[in-house]
Image 1: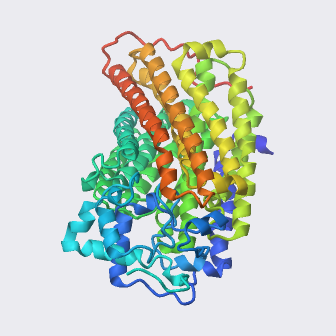
Image 2: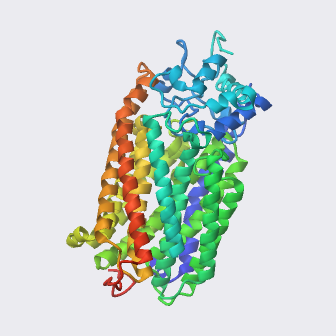
Image 3: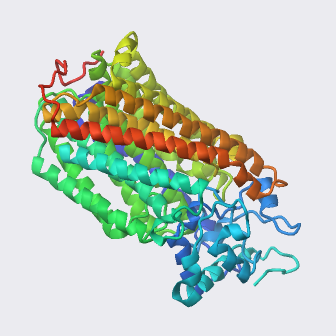
Length: 181
Length: 451
């Protein structure tokens, strides 16, 4: 049967497309219909404020997501490493991400994961850190971002910090509510 | 088609330079760090998009404009349309240089370019597809050689994958969007650059070694199995992540099955060269082709291994994966494209290659540079992954640990860039033609025989 394909370009093209479509449909279209958690925001979560969205746009513009993931995986090491003051970080759920477009799950950890970073550090820490990360963390390879601190009279910095402080807060995972401003 | 190759090698040099700059930033984070336009987060998409589209896709298209008509026994369907394709495509790439550096991005891996440039790429691809299918449908040789199957497959799959990854993906959010994004990224490599690279290798390996293809049947099995299996595996980028277990398991199963198409290709290529390795020693083109084949095998053995849950828990999100990705795009598919350019440019310009010795040096610079690159990141990445799995080690210690590996990587970048510049110089001199002399390539027939 396949021998005929040697001579018929049309069948090669149609066959290649059909074979492709089987897997494409079952792995991209089926899951968004079968997995409700992919499209339903987690209960108790709220939409981003305008300021937080502007901050997220800076996160996107500067490519923060190339080096920072936002996902606590189903690995014990992840929950321990990204925990804080003796409390383990909760594992990420699909519902946490529904309001993110573009998504910021990331793929590479040149720097640490940020899914639970909201409230770990205060404003002044972030300001110094963005200006030059090595002032606070010797050995860091994060680029300096002095323009984030100075642009728009400091408004960019405020927006970005507002966004960062939301990360993980939907889960309200600190028993003592000891989040930094 | 010469314009495609010419523009692709220009972008190869530029984006390889950007790659070296990026690697230096890991060693000196402040290096060019206070200039907005040259910060890591903006140079990285320039490097990635520039290499994938500016160099590799353009070079592949140029080479296919050469080999498809030869396999069909006729001329390119429309030379004018071909020129329009190059013009449009290069405009898009130039636009992309501006948008990435100014921080305009859709914020999705491989899909950073803004909508208007996406439309440009899509149009250019439609032009390309029409031209290719036009040529194939009016062919004189009735039997379709395997390179043409891969080319047709690539034209169709690329259209579907690119539209999903750049347009449809914008309608989704969160995990759903991530799933589409990884579907695109993964298939960009597997269903765009793999079939294009294999089309080129299937054409040039038999010709360069002057032997018939080892097995027609194997090439058939390889083609149909990859067209069925590859597309299922996108979710293996999110193993252990916030995504359904069944989808992870499906991705792992199909990732492992990918060994089937890879194996058929490898056996076929090595089988064709079997007993003729003396010719590989003498010919830099064959060296590129066979080193590319070997890297292809290694990449495709790594891939299924990474997808296994236990291995993934160590290597995922580390520099190991960066080493793996560079072996695929640089070590395998760029090597194929380089070999194709070295073969075709002399024929296009009616002269001998400016210097075979220079091509040989290019090979060794890239080979040694590539190996240092891959191996240093594998070792460093694997060890860093192990350290991450021990929460008592502070994160910053695992970063400091990487420094020697990043220094080695930057050094390898110097070698690779040097090779790229030699390659560029060699081809420009061949195009420009001060070397003189008629081409003496001893190819009896432009169509590889099959056994």
